[in-house]
Length: 505
Image (tube, rainbow, N blue to C red; front, side):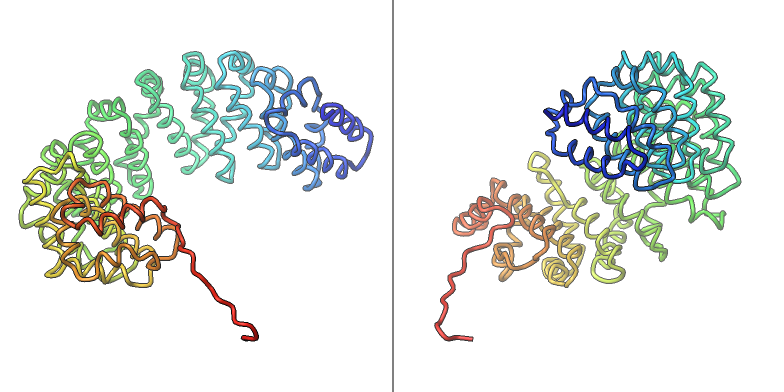
């Protein structure tokens, strides 16, 4: 029945000069069909008329056509799509309306993921040429979709061959020359493709795109240098990417850049990126190895934590949190002795006062540094986290409690995050039970009314219930109440009896 209705509407649309009303009816009809039944309803129908109506100056008409095609095309198989609408999709790539371009790019992304449909595209490279040109579009949504669709070519050897061993490579280089912004979009595509596998990285390396990107790390333009560092950090997310960068001597180069930053008055623009690079590297490989091999990195993080510049402090806090989230990272921080104690005291001061954003980032970093999973809780590590907690303040429980009661939801959640970090550790539980009214605070559902606050409190309760020492340290009465809280869920509201009085106002 729906197939017949769609066919009738398509005929009506073809026969009128102003098809807005008929398009609206078709859109409504398509939306009424369940997704599971949509393929049967549209298969065999010819929607070329809808594509032809995209060639209009009427915005409403174009928007209706896009909405209809979005609904229809997703129901067609990639093979059916490329066989029946390849010319129309190619036309969409040069349409003046960005929503039409994005529609076409999205469907082309589906096609290149399918080996059978991809063969059709590879035999008609004009489509891929047009997709590459879309990377040079003005508004970011179009290039973003183009990059996403092209990066899917990296999942097959024929796709990689076409992109890097044909005239498409030259087109990419021509598009690159448009502007600095577009050049970095091409780098983004290349990094995304490189991250898929060692084979795809080999194609990108042999094409000279990566060597060009690495060359920009030490370029004269400081802003371009900062962007290049971000790209190289993304490349380091994969193991084969890190191996390649090490072979090219990039780790040493970035370490030397950190050292040289002290004499560069513009280093504040790119130094955070250098530190983030090594922070990510430490987490993905080994904090100890990275900090010992590149001591300039660790020294700079401590220096930045004590810096008055909020940007520097923020990056230092995030990096310290990353390092301290692992057992190996905790041991690396401990080895620095008084240096880290000074930084921890600074983190405590930042958490207690100052700009809200830095307070939140400081609370998050402290919670990561103090967290110890049950399987990590050796006597030495428990003693370490306990000693760090007491370095925060003379009365650290009071300090964190005071932060949790301030009228800023993000600070409240950050403070609860620290309590959650120590909730699984016996020394933390002993502090909780010995702090007056603390267990009442934990079990009181009226504190923190936002969803985020309720979720954070629920996480704290869950951490306490899951700990094997909670019942013994907190006592069975508190343990039973915590289990009840957990069973009732984060958003439970107890029923309140109300009595109405006749005649009362």
